[in-house]
Length: 378
Image (cartoon, rainbow, N blue to C red):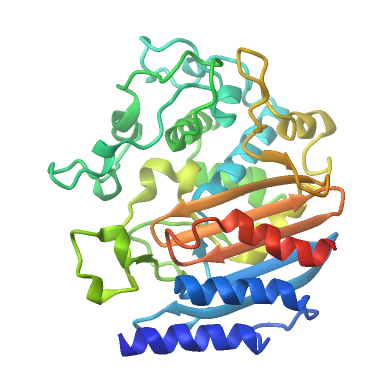
């Protein structure tokens, strides 16, 4: 506990003193943005934060604070790799969009045309529906992490092939008919990743590299492989109350996360990245260019359910209008050892990425992202 308290105290002091942890100092950000991070970091005992902001083509803030590895007393730096959580879904949506533009996949064809392993008993589902959470695929349910049943914790299973991944959710009934209702689903994106692999004839990470990372000049995004040695990967932590009933509160406030084998959901939440790479990816979506005009429009236009109601989600991205009337494209990430945020204000050409190595806290990282953005927009 002494080491932990020391690390957390030093982290908060670093932010408040406006001293970069490491790396090329950027233009000094507005103090309110830094203060918002400092207050959240101190209140929620977040070991490390990294933040990056692009205004147009200019990187105006790229900084890390706190401790990437508490046990080894390693500071976070601008090149520390954090779990992206569900921000990986945005990368997957862009892979699908670029593969569609290249004629490799059709977003509106039944997925069984590409992935015959998908059970015939399910009604036809399309990639567009999967990317917009309109396919009726379920999200997590209690049995996925039932420690009372041997082998039931999906984060701890081995995954050798597509069949082992599909076995997690393919046998379950759909929550609704495809297209009928919006149901946010990590497994829907896991399925989308399998469809893209089948259509593209390559593993997901190879498709990501060839269709997004390489053409987008993005270098700081890697596979969060459970067994691989990944230089610069932050250690993952959770709040002790997340394991209530299993751990004594005296171990808190922060404990090591449970192991996570994200191989079943690589396309939905199986990546690590530095904040600058995530913000760079965001700025590729200010306007058409990286995607053609028509595909960009499809990606950033809310889909509709069967009743004609907007879902607020296009191809991956959530699309909202803030209190000042500004358009915001965004997504958050949440999993063991990570909370992350990516927000893009296309009209203001502003892209903001915030990465952490603590799950559960802050509970509303989207609000933190908007607080940081406010100091750059006002």
